[in-house]
Length: 149
Image (cartoon, rainbow, N blue to C red; front, side):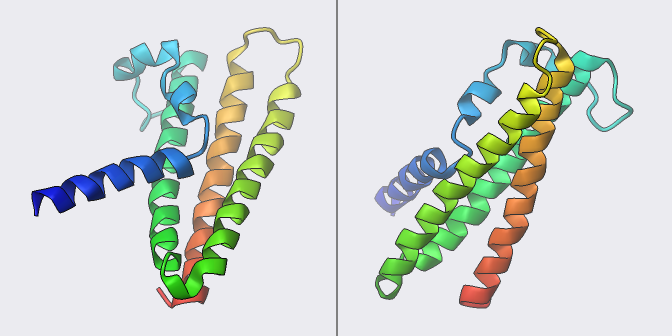
C-alpha cells in the first residue's frame, strides 16, 4: 500500500510540473515575495509592492487550481478507449498556454519605458490570473461535456 501511495505522489508531482502554467517556478521565486507575510491580500490594496505580492499569490492559487482541474480531466481521458482524445487534450492545453503567454506579454509590453515599475508586473500577473480562471471554467465545461462530470 505504501508503494502505491509513493507512486501516486510521484505521478502527481510530475503531472503538476508538466501541466502547470509553465513558468510558475520563476513567479513563485520572486525576491519581493520575502515580504508576503507583512501583506494583507484580503483587505484594501496597499502600496504597489503589496499589490504586486497579492497579484503574484493570486496567480499561484489560480495555477494550482488549474493544475488540479486539468489533471482530473487528463486522468479521465487517459483510459485506453480515449487515446486520441488524450493527445488532443494535451495539444489543446499546450496551445492555450502559448496563447495565454502571448496575450499577457502584450499587456506587459504595453508598459515599455516604465523601467522597473510595479504596475507593469501587476497587470501582467492579473492577466495571467484572469486567463487562468477563465481556462478553469472552460476545462470544467469540457469535462462535463465529455464525461458528464
